[in-house]
Amino acid sequence: MKKLLETTIKKITPSLNELKKESEFAEKIKEKINLIGGNFESIELVGSIARNTHLRGDRDLDIFILFPKNTPREEFEKEGLRIGKEVFKGHKWEKAYSEHPYIRGEIEGYKVEIVPAYKILDAGLLQSAVDRSVFHAEHIIQNLKPGQEKEVRLMKQFMKGTKCYGADLSSNGFPGYVAELLILKYGDFKNALKEISQWKNGEVIDTEIQYTPDEATKKFNTHLIVIDPVDKNRNVAAALSLNQFARFIGASRAFLKKPSPNFFFPKNHKPWPAKKLRAFLKKTELVAIEMGYPNDVVEDVMWGQLRRFSKKIANLCEEKDFSVKRSEEWLEHQKRCIIMIELESTILQKVKVEEGPEVIDEKNSEAFLKAHPKIISGPRIENARWIVEVERNYSDIKILLKDLLKKMKKQEREGIRKGISKKCTILNEKEIVELYSKNKEFQQFLTAYLKGKEIFLDY
Image (cartoon, rainbow, N blue to C red; front, side):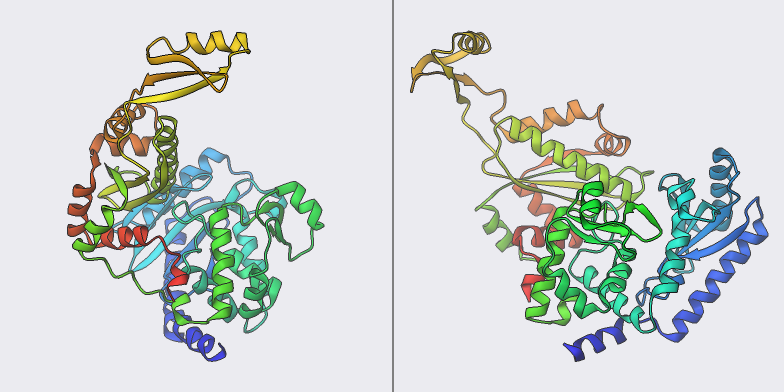
């Protein structure tokens, strides 16, 4: 393991030349902001580059423009957007959202975010959610011991390799700040994995000991509680899903039993040949909803809307007696959104049996019989209960999905509405295979989905 970790550190640590270029580029952007001018007090580089805990090739710059705390909110947001757009003149950019809008884009191969924030003296005086980010940078720089930046990098790469990294809505995983706090808590990567492999639901990480474990659990009540050392009212792991929490524990156990570079640098799934895909699809029942991608919706926002919409669709299918084994989403930026739905059956019998109350329950018996005026067979008594057979409204999943999408189009959030308006098709298995044969990214997604195996168990 020692040799593996040493080799991995060499691969993921930015070179001196890379660090020099990043520093020069950050200064260049800060100088540009100063030339643009505005009612701001200072400009701060925050994020992992500022803390020297970023990974090689992660060219992400988070630049915060700090405004006086008495700046009106409307002016604060307007100025932040104005300066951001000026920075990106001649470059690709988009408006993104945290608690308030900001501008992000790409310049010279660097992903840059220009974020307005208030300059405050203490994180307890927050005026916007992002104000604490400057304090995060200060806390990590002050408390991380020499050499621990390597351990943080190992933790981040492990999270990435096991698909647990990223607090965005497409991942629901760990933010980089949690990786840093885990190393502050446990000392190094190997010891952290030993502790993580024994985590239980309601685990509390409180590096500054701001609560007793019982107090933290009572206040936040979730599977993992990571108290923000600069703001004790915040759980840094709030976006972490229960599945990602469990995945991280499972991956930690698997690595300790059998260390492998594949935990850090997973191999892509080798796409199945079309023949194997067709043979597999004969063993399961699969449909897909294909929608267009709305032009003006940020990808992270679209992921959140797509996930919620997918869950709603699955629940509505269940309500109509279609048993959903699992569903998953796939997004091809600027092109399409796909919701895969795997069912026990795509076709149901046209008639279903409804079991009512016991006959001796007069009040509920009357209500049950009145609620079923269109009876195909019955009412009859079986095991002392009323039984009726009625016709289903839907026996074909494709017809149900078409009707649901028509109704839901007007009710859904902007991204889904626009996506459905742009394109909305129910794909059967033959059409899924056709898309698979044309699209390499979809091949990767569908192969992984159908294999249904945690990536860290492939080694």
